[in-house]
Image (tube, rainbow, N blue to C red; front, side):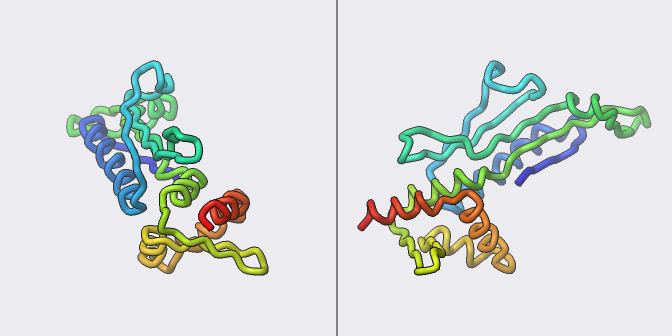
Length: 173
């Protein structure tokens, strides 16, 4: 899921912080250990003026994995698009663009599995897999029309995380 904003230059850095807080709120709701990194110039893409990465800890890999990246591109993209707005002085000005990934879903699913020790993984004879734990259940039950629950099941099938889940089940028995 991508987050994209087009803003006036004077608002772009405040909006960048709002976008970072949005992603941090998602990670807090999932009760995942995370850290926020402000990337240095050498680690950013050449088009970005400022980038934050959000990482969750992977117990299986014993390292932090990026699950979100939020950037302010200032006028780089708008200049190429010729995307302008008129200020109060009626002169055309380049807007700023901000892009971010809300969460990398496959890594978030793995992080939920690894970090929720109180979770229970259930498989039935048809091979359907369900994860039941405190944070995931609360998030699924509060999602509008349980849309997140459907997405969660689709992701499981798509990335075939079933093998990982079955290994977790064996490890916890």
